[in-house]
Amino acid sequence: MSAQRSGIIPYPIARQPWGMLIPLFALVAFGAAVLYSAAGGSMQPYASSHVLRFGVALVIALVISALPRDFVRLMTYPAYVVVLLMLVAVEAMGALRGGSQRWLQLGPMVLQPSELMKPVIVVTLALFYSSLPNSMVTNWRALFVPGAMIVMPVGLVLMQPDLGTSLAIAFGGGVVMLLAGLPMRWFIGAGAAAAALAPLVFLFGLKEYQQRRVMTMFNPEEDALGAGYHITQSKIAIGSGGIFGKGFNNGSQSHLQYLPEPHTDFVFATMAEEWGLVGGLFVIAVFSVILRWGMGVARASRDRFASLIAAGMSATIFFYIAVNLMMVMGMAPVVGIPLPFMSHGGSSMLTNMICIGALMMVRRWNQNAPKGGLSGT
Image (tube, rainbow, N blue to C red; front, side, top):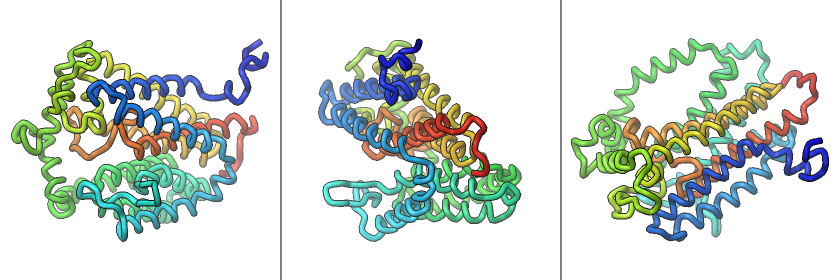
């Protein structure tokens, strides 16, 4: 008789996806240790707030995981409209920090609406396509309406300006559209059009500093003390870690303040210097477990709405991971995408834990679904 059936472990606890949660807890704890070192051997100001934010976000994720399907379907479109209006409000009266206008001051709380749009766009498009008859998936309406739903928030976020977040919103929405069954020729055509327009976007759509970031990616050593400084120092930190690293709290790049943003965008470089290749493989292994679990939830879903939510949330987490790791290794421009569950930052932690909560929610729907499956949506 299992521990669950014998009553040793309460059912609400036993039914949680511990195969994903335990590695996640280990990753967050490892991230706190890295942030402890980044602060020079102190829990303040990074490590303690990192753990606290994870605790709050975990509660939010557990609340999301308990939401019933009908409630989610009812609130999806209103949630999209509310977050879109919040993005408009950012342009009108948002707080200005570091030359960017991305935040809303709501009393004692500072909120970044663009982060909320990442999971919201996934659920919104999942609802749209789950309500669309299969015969209309190849119709132009299946492309026009969702396309407009993506373009509006992406345009508002680009005005902040925040290229990384706008790409994340477009990526999550695009994955949902692809998995919903839209013709592949549409995506090939869109890719060809994007490639043709890329030079014009680069010349006229990007600001000067964004253009420098793109060009620096190809040859950061050309301006190692200027535009290429971030990538150059990140590569030095990662390479100097070797196989086993310099040891906990012994990273010179971060402690001597050569490495910019060692607690946020470049936290992986901070970790790799002290923990080496072994630490890097651990981080990548945990991310692989989380993403594999998320896609497993999508495959186990018996209806389009649930499967698209799960796949879209997994894709959103993957985007964070892939772009950050490529960025710190000089394979992508520096676009300000933090590393999930390790970087210090409340908005990133909230977004990724919302994705985890949504995946846990879909998993619960799958467990409670009739064995014969669900028809229609």
